[in-house]
Image (cartoon, rainbow, N blue to C red; front, side, top):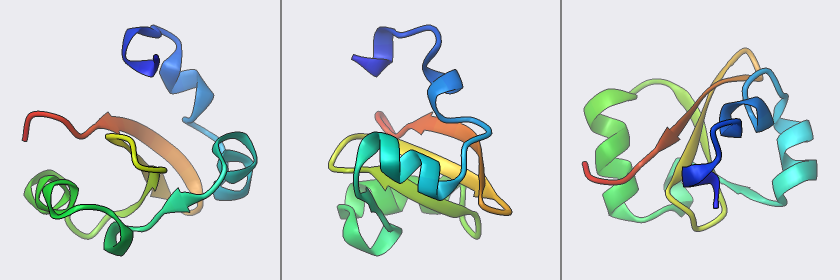
Length: 76
């Protein structure tokens, strides 16, 4: 549903990891997601602090524990 939601970034950007866990439940680390998502991460986001919203294609990028970007990891 978030793909079509024009306000989806507002749900994530600026929030802390704790706030996002409270909203979405467990967030997955890079080690916990499929190789497909790890490959996409390595292409464009390597070295960045990221978490994934469960088993979805949504990756959250963090700077100093605050979300700065919501990325749809599809089509890499």
